[in-house]
Amino acid sequence: MTGRRWRTARTIGLVILLIVAVSTLGAYLTAPRQGGLLQADSTAPDGAHALLTLLRDQGIDVVVADDIDDVAAAARPDTLITVAQTFFLLDGTVLDRLAALPGDRLLIAPSGVTRERLAPGVDLDGTVQFGGRPDCDLREAVTAGDVQLGFSDTFARADDGAATRCYGGALLRYQDGVHTVTLVGSGAFMTNAGLLGQGSAALAMNLSGTHQRVIWYAPQRIEGETTGATSLVDLIPPQVGWAVLQIGVAVLLVAWWRARRLGPLVAERLPVVVRASETVEGRARLYRSRRARDRAATALRTAALSRLRPRLGLGLRSSPAAIIDAVAGRLGTDAHVLWHTLFGPSPSTDEQLLALARQLDDIERQVAQS
Image (cartoon, rainbow, N blue to C red; front, side, top):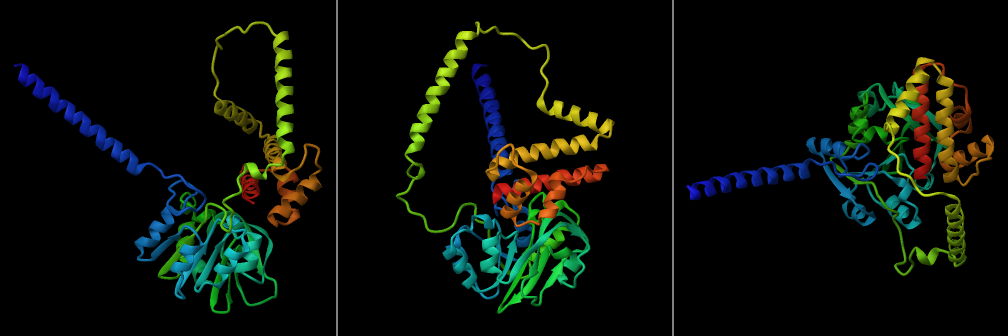
């Protein structure tokens, strides 16, 4: 009897252990893989894993390049080099190597220096709500049809050369010698979450799948020459140490001074715990019930400006004109569009309020990545 019970307990233990092992393995394999914007293997909302999987399912050879050496090794005249996350491309040597490689190019939301090196003769032409009808004869755009893709930069040829502009200039293609260069002002529609938008998946597939071999180059760190002997501590001026020491002493003195004025701490249980998300939702419902779109827009703009000022190196008393100039200089965006978004009139409909929130979020994201 004892032996039978032992065998039964051992069997149950092995089954439980097997279930735990299978569950752990399944959770590991299906867990989302976090990563940067448009990173090839990232399954996060802003990753590009879904798009690259769709391209491979169509029989396209997708080569993921982690650095410029991988791009150079895989580049051929019949390839399409897709360049994303261009804010990390700061070194002139890296950009010159990219410009000299064979194959066509697809530049996703290129920064100023990347656009000058890889798409010479193309200038920023402003910003547009990326979406609607393509209004061009480019096959990739005509096939995708109407799209709703959000806020985007627009491009134009500086020398009035031949070029095809779609979606108000948010998509531009022209011939640069033997290279066909395509620029798109926003890469949001290519992300895992963005593919769900109207026409997004079709346009992303059409632009990325024009060749049987695609090199996906989305660097997640700064490319270029670095010196291994230099560390972050070496870049800090020597006066900073004394300043930090003085601030630390001042903080300790203030803490000691305030502690002498306070009595002993008394623990007290709160009658109710309210989550921050519930507070925000409750306030939003009050605004909506009173149709206070002006107050909601003011709250959104005030919060966005409070986060933008430190990133732009501006103080609390900075004038609206100074803020507009700083943002326009950082992003290359038309000042009138920025003024309308950051300091313009209050929206009159819920749709306009939602569009304003998205535009403010897009400006914050671009400033943070610039």
